Image 1 (cartoon, helix red, strand yellow):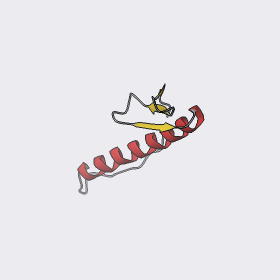
Image 2 (cartoon, helix red, strand yellow):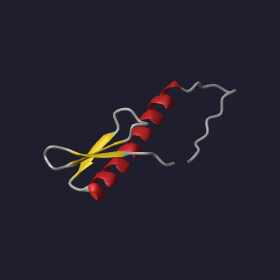
Image 3 (cartoon, helix red, strand yellow):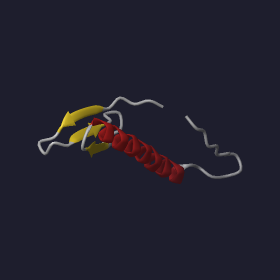
Image 4 (tube, one colour):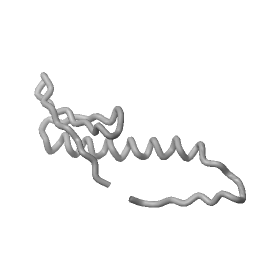
Length: 71
């Protein structure tokens, strides 16, 4: 998967990285490279957390077969 992110300089000299497609998915770094690495990890964590929430609401029973897919 690919996501667009924004990089903005903060007043303290750090670079703030945000993924607008994922509400609240924000990180930072001392430079652009570090900020991009940090937001990449934040995106992975955000997606994992959302998957865990969805997993708890999945129906169970003999007529429902759960699958895991990678994208």
